[in-house]
Image (cartoon, helix red, strand yellow):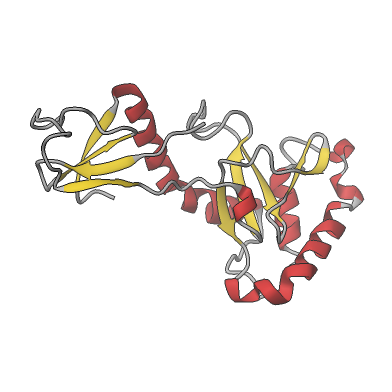
Length: 211
């Protein structure tokens, strides 16, 4: 279970205070946060992590082991999969292809289809994904951690989509990593850093104009 990050300003308009629970005393001025009014009341900082079930037609990313907010370290291996029109996950690993969403409740999700394409492509997407996942290429025997893995599975499926249907344009695993992982994990990395500092110290003070 992860905690919700809150943000508020108490006495200084140039400083945001981030926390899981508002401290009894302001860490800047020492006044009680219960008896003195905050400049900006606490509000929730939206997490870049989400439940895969809430993101149909998407590529999803999570650590191979642990979770992003629980045990993950920069440089750890990542695992990716594809969601159906109902948010169920298809993933490929040493056990072959499986369809489950239990371990994808705190992941990074990147939409593959333009939203206006959802209706016309709903059944075709699922049929095509099922057909692709059942190909002999994705048996457990053919899995290789380096040369035939989850990234190859996702890239292979993306290549089956008609041109112009998706905002993504990738032709190799390197481009897939650049487009999906690197470009979408910068914000996530900042969020993880803040989250862990709050876990360690109870709160974090940051300039109000910082991203």
